[in-house]
Length: 292
Image (cartoon, rainbow, N blue to C red):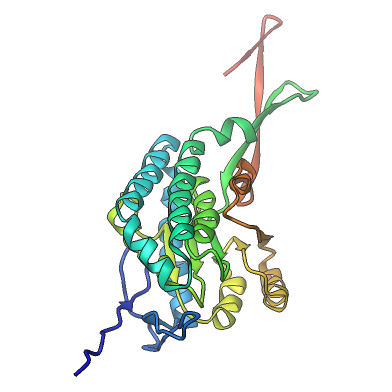
């Protein structure tokens, strides 16, 4: 008798834990050979709300020192490096060949290190001391926006997720991630990497299932401050933009070939930052100017 293989059940990742979906539903995506990939949670609006709540509670992430955030991002890269074989195997299950899978995992590790290096540097480049005509110092400083919704591309299962999520948390934001619906395996396994790293629970929350069902709730949620959209669905993007207009949240569309090294840069970090300007008076003592 032939043995019936047990498919792995992939849970979602909310607040540093691995719950099953609140709805109790699941789906079974298949690869190009019509082979089942696993049992994946089919998330609901309630899961989106739970994930946003967890992300909001973790906004103390922005108060960490920039150096400490860089250390933690580097630790994520270390943990991913140690599990390369598993990610290569999952990419192959989803239809990628061996060479391309190895290249994608290596690039994902390198990209995390790249953004780890920016954690304590982007402030100096994006910030400024501004010339003003009055007796003040005027400073412009980049600050995290808060909770960011991230819609991952259907292709680029691992490198697409890493390329969109890492700039968000590098800048001190927390996020709710809608993983690839058709190729979700690497996203959930990446959650296991995050769980084994030093990243506080709730900074990254990963949901699987129907984007059609989840995009509107995350776009209209009043506690989500910005959306990064990385997919190519024009109808879905239009619906997302309309829903996001309710609380005037920023929507950025980033659909690129994420396997190219030039598609990593400082300005992806800036997509989810706000520039805050501070005025500080200059005290005049005996005709001399001194700042304090």
